[in-house]
Amino acid sequence: MATNPYATRSSASIASGTSNTNVSEREDLANFISMITRDETPFTSSIGKSKATSVYHEWQTDSLEAPGNSRLVEGADYATPDATGSNADGASGAEAYKTGPNRTRLGNFTQINGKTIAVSGTKRAVDQAGVADEYAYQLKKRGTELRRDVEADIVNSNQVASGSGARTMGGYTSWVNNDDTVVYKDDGSSTIDCASPALANQGEGSTGITAGSADGYDAITLADIDTVMQGIYEQGGNATTLMTAPKIRRDISALAHASGVNTRRNVDETGSLRQSIDVYMSDFGDIAIVPNYIMGLNVPTYTTTTANTSFGNAFAFIYDPSYWAIATLRPMSEVDVGQKGDSTVGMLVEETTLECKNPKASGAIYGLK
Image (cartoon, rainbow, N blue to C red):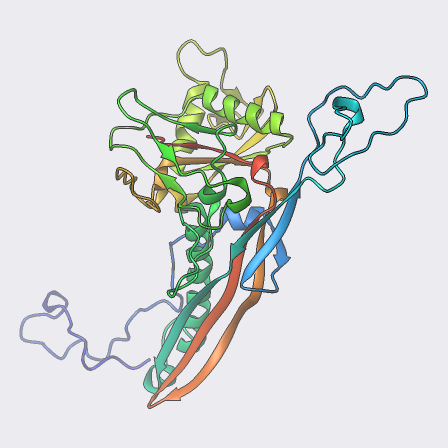
């Protein structure tokens, strides 16, 4: 590559009185571009995929009745059921059952996500180190950014919106707000509250997490994890993953090595010292501890009674990945806008939503330090 005539050379590299000595030197520019930013999407990569066919994607949930009395007397006639589970003759318990399904209908709005790429004709024509085609390079880069944006939408507190502006899908926290499967941390002077819509409207219209005052958070404990795991177990779920910010991931490992805790670090046959806790064996199943760097990018911001606040480090999600999916209405694709003057313009567009197949199968710890 020819030396850039507009580049400014350091005076330190040119000897006094010989200003033209080094003009023929080739610049030493490696033919690659090193990018350090992480491109993983831990949550969306852990869950499944499904198909949406409308801007409001719906599904149904169901559950079994609580265990009870199903005994019958010998020769008993069938009971006349009604839709409420009681009978016209007053019978109940074993003789009462529902004629209709005990199902709940849930839904989430699809969200349109997009990125624009514009590259000048000159930029595509010049010989660049590490880039064969600037447009193709930017297309790939923007696609990776789009995947990270969707991950951020899901793991942060996003409320559902279907108004005149952009449709917004409900993220994890707008679904998981059942007091039976959630722990709200409190330092004793305030509380972390959660907006809890009616089950039939969970997700739709949910405002996600609402925080108390700024001092209402505390460190994670193993008891917090056990409480959530027990709640999910009692609801019928089987959580297998705990996902949280990198800092809290370290805090969990530190809990196992705290003073007075009957655990020890593992030293394998190679002499490596194992400090981290990858799997926590709770009373209600084993759970993998997975860090999510996107959950740690935002500093927790607590604003009293303000919904849709970005909490960043303040979350720990405990869930079964099989009960979550990305429902796609339009897969990511390139829209070729074409030439705009001397620039090539394109867009990346997709339309998806988050499908929470049954909110009771997941839990969370909110308000973490």
